[in-house]
Image 1 (spheres, rainbow, N blue to C red):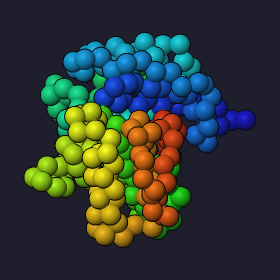
Image 2: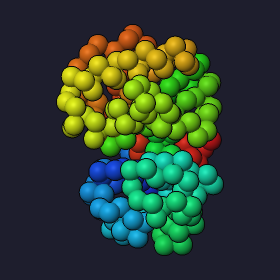
Image 3: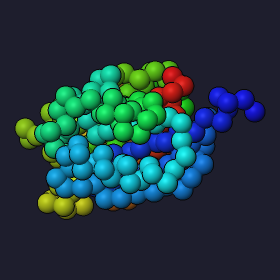
Length: 233
């Protein structure tokens, strides 16, 4: 086995409520159990990075993939609605590269979730329902960048995230949240005419309606497993 086949990737998933890590082999298979710590609040860069260091310290790895809940451009954080305003224009890739002494790539967390879930055929939409409402669109396995559909208008003058994020679920209850999500899926089907829809995230456990035949719930672990694609795409 040559050196490239032994490369270990530390996959990191930064969420609004938890930060998770897992080590992957070159094929994207787990080499470690998933480890998780609560996301610090306020979720400023310094505190989040300290949590990542704690999780990374016991692991053996050669490079790093990071999923971040916001728009990411060339490792630079452009939006961070569910974390802290200090993240805006923060160069997370460079910062972690220096701290961990390993090469680092950073992408939107829903994009990474999608890389772990899609088949690579046709038009595929990925939604994540957790602290916020994430989205990723793929055409023949190729990512359409910076979609951030969660912040687009949905209904009653509010965005998808305002109506379907965890705060809305807790405020308005499961029934309204389910009704809204069902409407959102119908809207997005008409908008994108996708072949398949994948729904991930911590709040999928609260989905109580029958999904359309071309939609399915996928494991939240895809938010880590998809991290290998940042190094292979």
